[in-house]
Image (cartoon, rainbow, N blue to C red; front, side):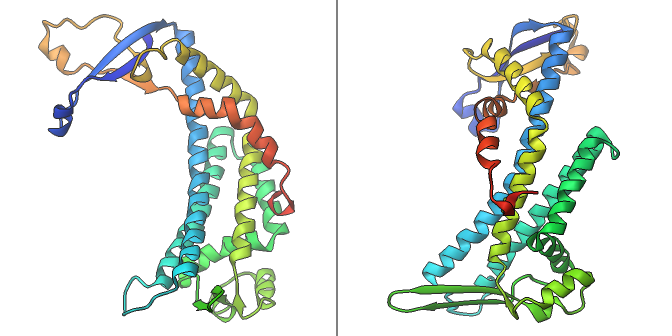
Length: 308
């Protein structure tokens, strides 16, 4: 037996403080097998979309963290008052490494997800390969940063120089990578190595990072657009079913209940009673329903740097 309802926290503040908790399960709307299956499938699709957004957000937040720390250093200066293991150079390197790692995680997760869901010979996976290959072939920033992550993993920190200058009416922060060090003891491949050799000795990678974020965001939107119709249908179903219980405080869930009640007189049966449930993806459904089309439309007209 299946039921749509809520889980309500009924514990007191004192119980929470003592580490205890109590919940009340309210089954409000009975569901047929078909209704349960449809709702579970829709909710799973929204949960998968939430995960896709989360991996992209890790990229965006890592980039924002890196830029924000640069801005902080520009305003406050580098400030080496005494020797410290956590010098500004190391902190900035840490943020850049987080960004490079988040990018690779996003790409690897997306590739694996498409392979598992659709198969390695599917049109969906083949399109992902074509889009990423086109990015790699078309943009130096994409192929350079893709390989820079490997360089960092095997050869050392990404940044070499951090300097700050200021006058009474201006401030400047310089963050660069040494071309010579990049070309030492690492296999970039002949073509990419030739491109790096043509860079200045002190390489400012800031513009490459901005391009890369734009490329990945547009790639993500292209892939999500392919699922737009299914996501909108899933969001509509979850939102509609949620409206049936929305007036009840608590976490909206779908429960799988025992077909026959467990008698309270049987302690052994009560001790092994389990209640399967899943939480409705209300926030994701609302995001898809309200913003998805506008978001894709607004960002679909990006400049060339963002077009796979």
